[in-house]
Amino acid sequence: MQNKATVTKPLRSLEDALERCQILGMRLSRQRRYILELLWQAQEHLSAREIYDRLNRQGREIGHTSVYQNLEALSDQGIIECLERSDGRLYGNISDSHSHVNFIDTQQIVDIHVELPEEIIRFVEEKTGVKISDYRIDFYGHKRVN
Image 1 (tube, rainbow, N blue to C red):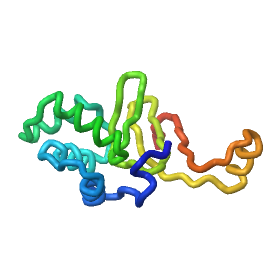
Image 2: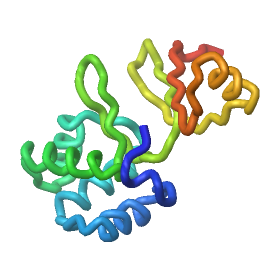
Image 3: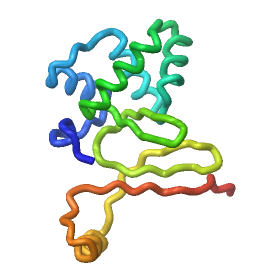
Image 4: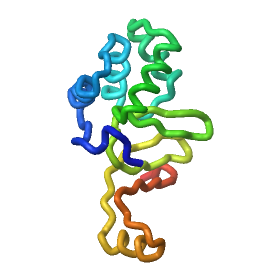
């Protein structure tokens, strides 16, 4: 799960993401900025099509190809998250290690930072013979009705 960008400080803001692009020598084109701004404003996981539609509705004209190319470059560098789902890829703004809560009824995905107790990590290491360096947990459920 670790990639090039996660070995440095976590990206917790749009400014952090823009700075990481500059550090990596990535060109900060207008389109790339639009995508990063949208992902940080939306605070949700979006498909490339949803990103394209939202940007164009905002009057920020951008082509399909440009959206896909920029999403690929940003996720390859660990600046944004890319989730592979059975119905396609979803992109989110958090690139550091985190877990997800998946709502089965609404298809919504919520990011959450979960820290497992040390005894659980030791248990997994003992059972598998693997030294755990990182983990991600996917929770699934339905929205609770109060």
